[in-house]
Image 1 (tube, rainbow, N blue to C red):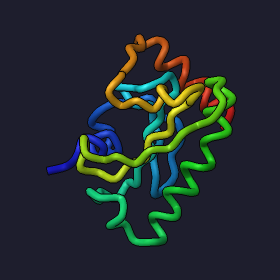
Image 2 (tube, rainbow, N blue to C red):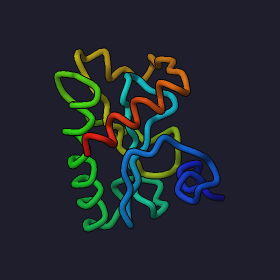
Image 3 (cartoon, helix red, strand yellow):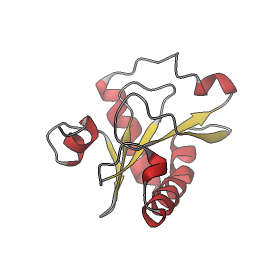
Length: 129
């Protein structure tokens, strides 16, 4: 059965897309820890990030890194943190989270954002890419 991320890749479920290449997709997390919380995924459905072939893994990391300046400009923060926790969806993914303090990386604390604000944040990030 396809993961929720594969359904997003296939256009079956909408997302607030940030960037896309032939192999990767980045979009806003619908259950964010902070405004601008972005998920970066390979389009190939692989459950565990460390099971990825080296070339795909390194490509995913490079793609994620390329997005961080745009996220930082669009959502002012001290840093963009990165986390790989991957238990909630059986599809490899990276969390990019704008941080002003360590508490911004608290996955137990989620914030609520309106649909309009999600769209506005996504547009601001896309504009900076």
